[in-house]
Length: 576
Image 1 (tube, rainbow, N blue to C red):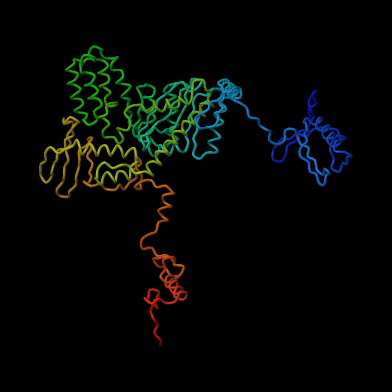
Image 2 (image 1 turned 180 degrees about the vertical axis):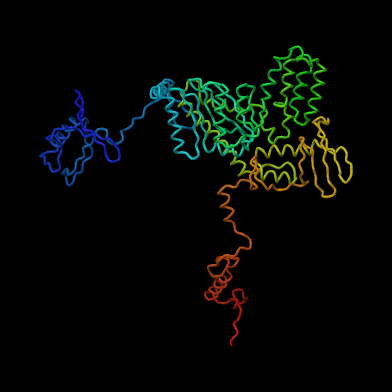
């Protein structure tokens, strides 16, 4: 009941389904009652106007029904009933509008409208920001399958946050051999450090495995975050890639004790102009020689160490402190020391982390609350997964252009995703254009071939040894420092290959399966509607139907003189 001066009194009720409604408090003599009789229509209208004034609305006259000159029905409605009549006007003179070509007007909000909207959101959030994001993630744990969420609080302050959903866990199970993570700033107004865990999928695109927020970059904070990551995914990656942050290094060594820790080459090589004299770098070939040696994946560690020492002796850098320090930890960042590891070339730098962090920072800003940051993060993840579906659709529904007639190229197009196939196709083309056999020989039942790899100018870059055992015709190739026994022609894979292909020749969608199943199989018998037998034709092509039609034609038109309409009597039945 509202008793304020100048307001309409009403009683508040709650319906059975939880809806709130109000009943106006009107005196009994002014309430319309079924069965009331009036002398004129004007009295009825005045009665409803009096009731509307006390109830807080205004009535209006609507349609009426007239029978033989007498009004039998009259409709009285609320003034807000129905749809209002819109009036056309030149909106370009009074609002912010742009008109695109061959389209209708598009009305946007002004800059002030957006500012007011953000202001209202922040007023609604208030000082409940941390509690709202915790409540939101706890609801996801209850409502979403296989969703994991952890956080820590010191007093009333949120110190760390970690979350991962089911899709991220599936992606890590398939593509989690190599893991990279890097901290980024400027994603929220509390200056909490955002740490996404990034990998590479079978389309060579960035994929997020998990995410976390930290209040600082201490060893304990990173240990907590990596421990929660390990609890959620249940297995350690083969290779972990980070920058030279000391806290990250100790945390990775403690939590991921079975993984190989690799440092980002880009963060190391970018310090080269700062650590070495500029005159030495600009006036000599030292920079090019170091880059050519360090980034070479095809040499062995012993060859790298030999060439490094020759380079230091040539430029008199044996006692250089920074180069000596980097050489001491060469096993943590030089690619040739990781050549025996599968997927070692997948990531050499944290550039994918930088790309992923840039995407999240585009959608979020340092002025956002934690709730707004979580919404921006969800939008970025949705966009990432949408692009993955687009590339998957392209790989399944289209056929790439073949550059050769080799069976191995066609087989690669059937099992690999489009991005991976283009990489394989490039290697096949290079093998045909830039590789040739230098010499061959037979030693103790083993035939050895030397295959040279040249550059565009015809200079030999690398040489590989290919051996053929004459006893069992097995072939082995010394490539990337690891011998792999392969046949000369391609062999279909037996195991699951989740780095660009699957167990089937390629992924087949439900629609394509339905079309394939609906096709007519050669030699398949079907039930004929005329013969009532399982034969290789249908009722339209049934011979029995054709004979009946021919017989009907003879009955209608009679037999022709040339016998063209004669009826085949069919096989005769012998009597007893």
